[in-house]
Image 1 (cartoon, helix red, strand yellow):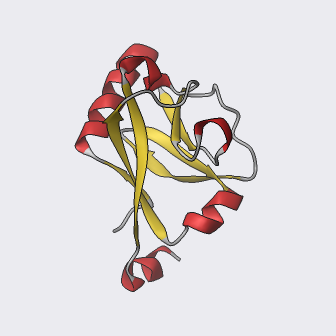
Image 2 (cartoon, helix red, strand yellow; image 1 turned 180 degrees about the vertical axis):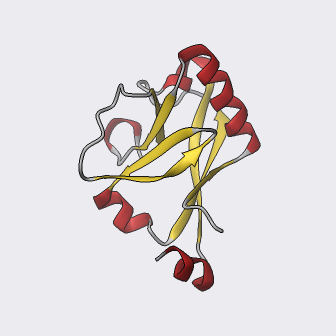
Image 3 (tube, helix red, strand yellow; image 1 turned 45 degrees about the vertical axis):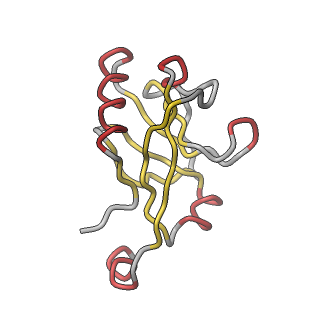
Length: 117
């Protein structure tokens, strides 16, 4: 079964480290503005999830959300959360680690898409 969101081994390692420091965490795919379109990591509950936010799945035991309006653009792709060196979003937990989460994507095959709908 294909997942809407997955994570690289490097991302899973960083998620595990952040959970050890901060307790349960969550993600929300930013829709732009100050931090561009990047996965933002917060302590669980620090970002209020609204009726228009969609739960895409979990990575490393952390729930991953996206706003419905943005999902309409990304629904044909699998999000692959990775980590690169550098400073990310100033509100995202990994910012002080000298790393930042990065969203990569790939288009679902016709068969995968049919299984999701």
